[in-house]
Image 1 (tube, rainbow, N blue to C red):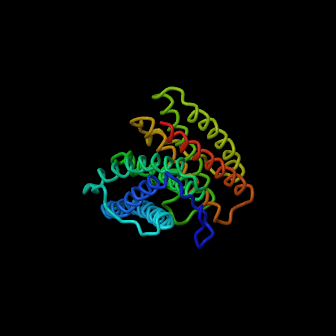
Image 2: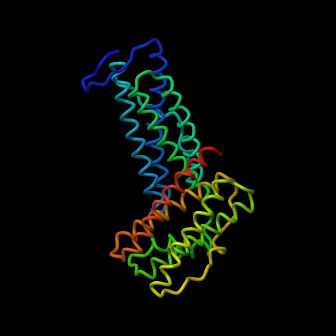
Image 3: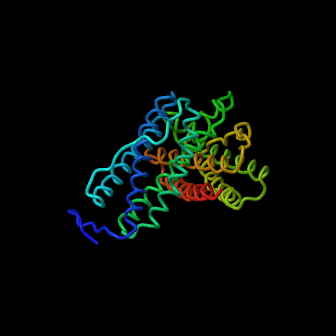
Length: 297
């Protein structure tokens, strides 16, 4: 074992040759990904998708730097940088390519972490694998988005999407958007359970969403706000498969969390703030459950 100038300890064992070869492969993969994702981002006119892909690209640049530093510490020389896969010229094909690439990276990085003796190398590659799993979720979501229809355009004014797409909000509007989003979640989970049978994660979260509705309803009565019409069924489509269902659940919770964070930035009554804060925390737990489910299917 030897120490570098930062006090980090690395093991020089008989497996180092294979380890450094694997790290070089990881470096080439990250280098290829940084270039490809920038290319893919420039293919879309959807600002949200472009921003998210560029955010993922920045993660890959960070991985590239970390892996390069490890390689230099282990070998005493700089790594080479090679494009190992051609990036598609079509946006949808590019997203599918990126999704598969991220899935493969998760297994590869965990394998490197398992083989490495040094705890720092283990930690870096396990963290990178977690990042790649998160990236795969996003690419799967982009891949599974339905073609825009009149109904999907209207949803931009309903629930969390509606709340996030408006710059000014009154208390009645916040409560209305929140309840609409809970209606939408109920309709989405009913559809999934009806088409795919009993799935524990969706069944449990559906029950939790009912409790969310129960927490919101007294606020409508207290502040004399009319209950919104439940139009959620018109916005629900049946997922192609369970992966798509879990991916939609992930995005739904991300939107839900963002909605409540936006509400909490306003000057609102304490009782409303308490409910919104509790529902935000619950949505974070739901997000983690959907991400675990997506990783399993």
